[in-house]
Image (cartoon, rainbow, N blue to C red; front, side):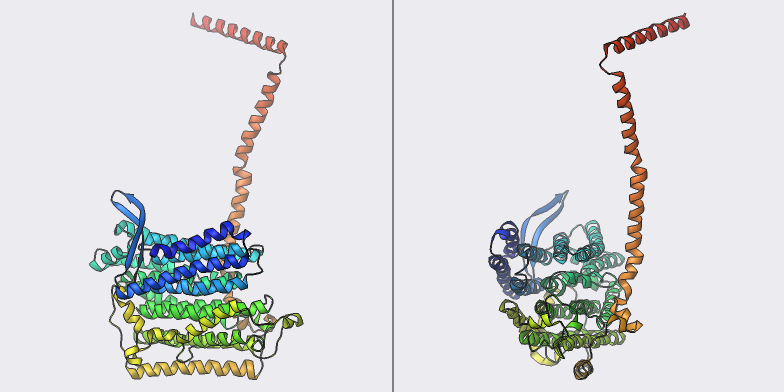
Length: 631
């Protein structure tokens, strides 16, 4: 069962890459989607199995390495935590595959796109199904490769290629931390298995400083994949890829791999307060900085990209305060509403003829009613509209932060407030007011085909009802279903900081207040007053700084990129003019000797007789001198 979950997408990849070019596009898309559907059905079977047996199931495929008693097997393992990830990856992935059949229908590289999507799903499934760090690392690197291929899919545009390289390189920086953690586990634990590492940490076999070191290195790996400060700048640039890529990789699956890595190694992190504090502070900083930058972005996908970074920061806040079930809850609900928002933005871009600047849009709700309604639901969910999925998952994180530290809650609530501001700004600017595009764009405005709108509607329903997975404590017997369900798979449980129902109601009241505040202020500005985001030359210095992403990319270019390129230029000069002289000198000497030899051996017998005579004379002369000296 577990093997088929990963093999089906691999078969789909092989089929598309080998035969897709010669087959009709709808058939290629249908087969690529069908294999993901098969994995989804098997994942449901796994979900039912682990629901009955929380210990999980495993399946050893082969022995990967066996040296002097050190064995590493390629084993697949699924428990309740894994089953959640399987359903998110294959379920949301299936909807995105179906959506892409229509969205990419006019693209020449249609078959390659679906091949890469299937390959990505295959690697992501290996990542979450691996029973040990080495198998996880294969999937980890595989999704990095697929991310590079999909971000730079339209490689004819040089800026898209640079965005792909940027994502690849920044992820490799984080991956170095993960690799070092794997080495330390091999040296001091003698195994890569998650269960063995967890047992060693709990039994006291690992000293505290080593647990902290391994935990921090694992977190460095998570920072790269999940776009946390300082390794977050690749994700906004990754919007260069087709919009379904943004939904699949940078909203629902790949960027959550870092969260999964920490949850899977929960025993290590729960034994290191230093690592937890680091995670919490990095998550806080990331959620706040990304939310502030999103306030002045005008590219519709860039707003959603920074929103993703900010929401990932919320997940890491939850991890840092020990609320692992809250992090997983927000991971699931975020997959629903953020995939919905990205696919909705793709529907808008499709109708606008590839226009992504919100300032060129406006009034689209009349021409695109389904996209508008579903996008509205996604916006309400992420902004914390009462009783939608994002309201419950974000509220649980805020409540956990409040119980841990009031200052942490205060900063997190600011980030949550800003979420409503930038999302309602996006909604009102795009769908309300008058159309600000060209006449040609206006004449082509239309609702997207049903292959694109059906996934939007399904995700909208999930965004509405996803909160039922883990209702708060005041919901009574229906509360915290997800928390209690995954609890058996969390090795170490921290005593929760209980807050009274009155405090809970107060926190809910604050959440509703900030939602209403953001809605009213943005509605008043962008709908009632018909304001439009200003052009760059009209912005104040502070607004321009936010629009330019606080110049972080420029700072990185000055500190790292330009010195590296300069060093490369000097190295190239040294290679050409210094190192290159060695083979040139050897070539010159060989040429000179060859020319001399050619003159000597010219095929003329008379010259050869002269050379022989001179040689005989020299031999006799030297022999006579030697005999005289001897006597």
